[in-house]
Image 1: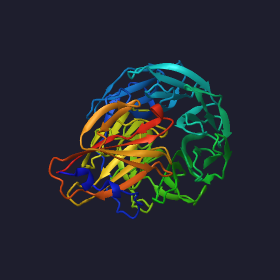
Image 2: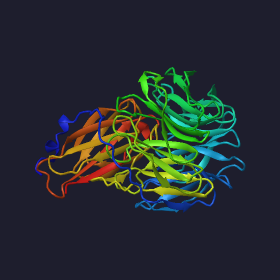
Image 3: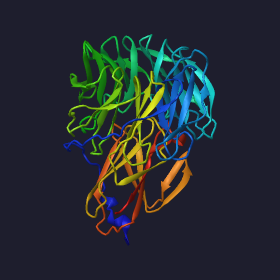
Image 4: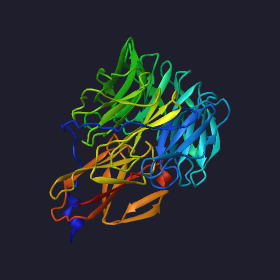
Length: 496
């Protein structure tokens, strides 16, 4: 190719409204289990050792600690070095971000037994040491990182199961946090998520209130102060998990939960119909028993959002493929380890498709279910976490001349400014605590939507010859990231 950048038509790339696409097939390989010789609870997925692939940090008790499974670069894992936590602390939730601004990923853990959030500071080489701890209400179970006020620094929110509250801790600077402010959030508050639920540009909160049989929402005033909004009834179901995502491609955030009662085991979808208002729940049987944690992602690479749910008592995982309009087909079941209690996603094997990870409490193990859907794009890794964890970049297309090629930036900070970088070589230069992979041959500024997503589409060059290579990566302005940046994984596309 003599003019690869002009041929790909970057000047004409524009946002694409996604919807109406045919549902794909979610195809996961049989699980591979890794023993963690403890009782695992939740996991965070990120590049903790800085080698460009995705590792796992896992909260566990008996004894209390954070355990690491380190990726060998092909999607296989080996145990890393544990970080011991205080005795009887019973760690549950875990999240990662650069909390102290020193160019690496730190961790925050909800210590259920001590009513605290414990910060673990990265020492610069992937080794962690205990930092400050912060009191929260009784029974901290989940913790998330978000930007809740206007100072562009990462804040914390925790759901506290025994007190029925969501506690918010605002960043004071230098990785220190102010005292927790507790907001009533129903009875037996469990999973927690943040998203712009009312379209005003700031991050709101939603929690699964198990014994209230409802999803409880808190709306942000933009300064980190929250007000209760109308709850979403799920009775007689008792919700365990909750997520926010764009179900139907209309640009706003919808909600999904999972729960069970009286022999019913359902995923429930709440579609946003107006800012801050949601339609009554639409139920989908999981065909498993006691569904709990769930996660959204484009698992079949058809550029709409699918959902996966773990079923604790039947020890399996349910995958629902989106038909493009926000409706889901029949549930597909995949076996996991015993009693899966938490679910995470990431491309751990680098084939360009999201894999799934479950923590199995009674099995003392972690299950990896790799995605068998092949992408013409190779995932090179090197993602850098931000407000919502690791941003993603997915490529869709065959790379045949004149075929349609689509790219989707996902899991970024909603409404953030971003840059899609295209290079015809890779440089792998350290930048802002991450790795800048493509050469700077072209830069496309863009703005993520309210879901933290941006979709672009173009025609693959007609004069592409076999072996022509392109490299893509997205960088996002994000106060929770290292040096105020987060980054997607890098993709390699080589013309067939």
